[in-house]
Length: 542
Image (cartoon, helix red, strand yellow):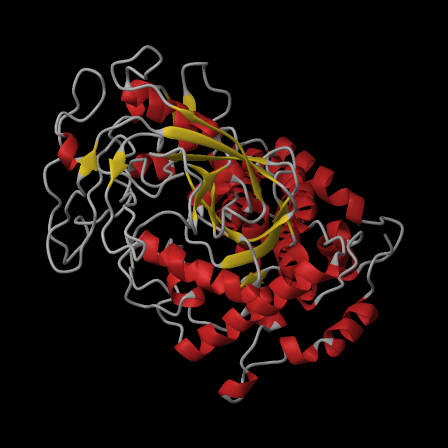
């Protein structure tokens, strides 16, 4: 593709000035700005890089971005439930078999449904999580034991959906549901576990926007699908075995482990082009001059929408509506911005840690020169390597031709990211290549500090990956509601005996300040089922 020039970029920015003009004036001029995109460039880069990728979305679990998307015709989706009947109205679909199998069991009654039909409560996940209520201690919904069913559906046509990034299916008060409750629903007070009403509100919005559902992530990606009678073909609804029948699962911890393994297989993408994201229609709170400060001083790296005004959220919500409508109607191929991030990350993700860790000036010098020489023309004068800096920052953006206002914002964010990388590398080069007066140990220490600081700013999820695990292990990162504190900060290979009962990273209902503690967890019997079934609980059906 023909690379965009600075003049072309300026022309496009002027052409889309109604969208990206400065918000320094009155509230009427509030909108996405190039300045905000540059300021939040590293976060926007990571949002695109981690989109529909389980591992990075688990680490950067407070998503602030939304992507129009299509589930192509023919894709298989799974739904675990207590009945053979096709759901009436909205329900949940899983992309992975193991995800849905966890919900193909008995029946947990949910009150207050207008059609009188009982529906499931919150999740078990091998940890018997209670249902949070506002005016009292968490309670477990009544359980009716029985044989469940696993439904298999196939998309009869392309399904138009909105992908909500981060761990958007994580029912926590840490910010995982901010984009759904505060941005999309305009609700500042919803309790985290009230996912049924959350889905109801989303589908009301989906009906208004004429879309089929919403993609979110927990251990595995799911779809809140708003009308099972439109766009889906039921392939089968097979009954699962009873607890004491041949074929039943004997060990619930192995079941949870295999669910985590299924999610881990999507660490680097959903696979087989089962979801096509329209990056050129992405909408992000990072595009806006919004206060995204986390009121929790211990977690400044996690953005929140608590400081945004309702008027600001109205503007962003309308932006999402316009982008979704344009994406559905345009039929144009979007810019593959995630491909751009992959090119940048694979260029630097192994070499930056090597520079930051080695004590050899020869290695640092060789790596820095190897990364930067492509941008330097040694035959021309280049004071301060200004031209080389520019070539470095623009190198992986050359194939891109922005076509939407959102492309312009992403371009600005990515250019800021690559410029940040290049600036750090040229500073390190000055120390180990150009500056002959500095002592070698000082040069090594200073260069390593520059690159380490760069890595802390970039926060690429690739640097947390475990490497290859044994067949009985999975690279385990905290994925709501699974995972301890160390699993978030230092994911490692774990087997099924290690994974069971790990969930202290997440602020769960009853465990947050001001909440009453949950009731004691029922013990697990020898067959892996709770001994006190009446106190067990489940999440939305999948």
